[in-house]
Structure formats: C-alpha cells, structure tokens
Length: 96
Image 1 (spheres, one colour):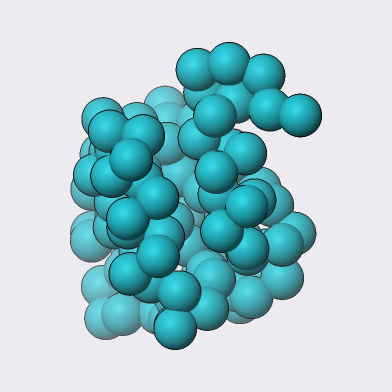
Image 2 (cartoon, rainbow, N blue to C red):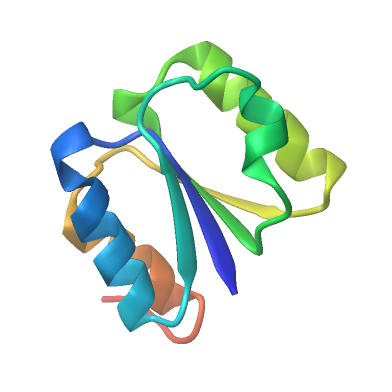
C-alpha cells in the first residue's frame, strides 16, 4: 500500500513517513512543488491533502492526477501527526 501526502510541514516529513510505516504504507511526501510534480505522484492507493499548508495549484494538480488514476483523495485542514494517524486508521477502522 502506498500513500502520497501533499502539503504539511517540512520539519514533519520524517514523522509522516514513520507514521505511514506503522500502518504498513509506503509514503511519498511533497511539502513543496517539485519540478514535474504530476509525474512524481505515481499510482498510490491514497492521496492525503493537508489543505492549510499547500498551494491551490498543487491541490489542483494532485486531485486531477488522482481522478485520472481513480485514487481516493482525503483532505485535512490540519497537518498534524494526529490528523494523519486518524486518516490512516479510518482506512481500516473508525477513528474517534
């Protein structure tokens, strides 16, 4: 299983990857727009958008690619580690 995280804080990248690893997800984290972003997204099982810390152009590009590849997109206004845990838990069971 793989997840692409778009947005978030630069200092939290390692934490995001470790959290995903605990839930058996391989993670790619994009906190800033890389060159040729749409080709670097790949074909994940899930796209997580941290909407408070990402540009509109990155959101549009990620959503467009996810729709093209029929991938689920989950949006979260907060980019905390707890928000990511809740999203990943909700993929298997209900998060409280």
